[in-house]
Length: 76
Length: 245
Image 1 (cartoon, each protein chain N blue to C red):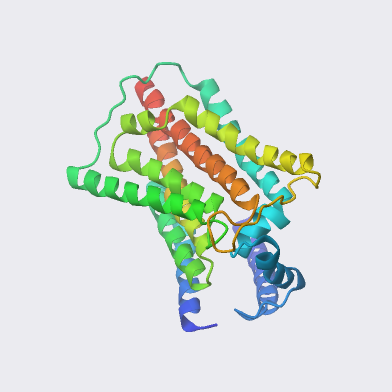
Image 2: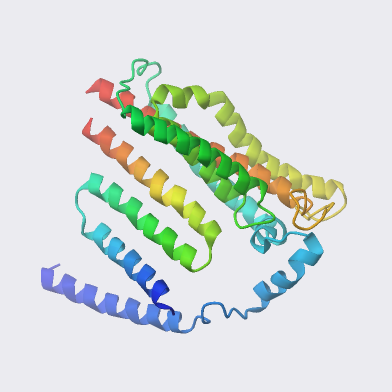
């Protein structure tokens, strides 16, 4: 494994840990977006640009958006 | 269950899971040294048999086209489920006056610029599905992302005006149904369901791959509509509830 790949994996792991330790839901939405962005980098480094593209939209935009809407609805 | 017991149980299972994960990772082939039979075979035959330079798309929409039909309908069923549930509980006409105070002008301007770029990238990725990385799924979510940006950088009214409900509903059904119907065309032409019926065209051009670009297009329509529908349903939840409280 080259250092760049190891770094990308470490970054994903760090964001994953941050998500697990976060209690505030709005922060969780933003963090999950950043986590998806780290995954996008990982996929790109492992030469899967098509998977990266899906992850970019679904993970970094759609999923946080749905969480944010749910939080907004719950808070009224 | 006491705290100590819980921590002990966690430590035990975490250690077991870590060991299993490390074991399986150690068994993976080195990066760039894939030697499994199925993938190697597809890599060899896809370009000569189907004239598709993107082997992933050839696998998804041709050699394993039937699996993808299932995947399409998983997404279809999920989105229809969301629409059925949320439309059932939503009050009709309760959200005519939706608050629409959003973003500053610069954010709106940059957002609309990005939106145009995203639309173009999405269409490009869909059109080149059989040639370069990407395809109907990837291009579809990018296109839906462009529509989401209309709401994020613009306002809710523009988003709804550009994605009229009947059109989105129709596109969702058309995409999913279209995929299944293309499979029937294969049968009418005398081969197995979803078997590629050609003509295969010249490898590396937009029209190459026979039925691959058609299935690709149907998938793009379905995925775009599915995500836009999802956004619409969730965003409609916002005013309906905040109006009550």
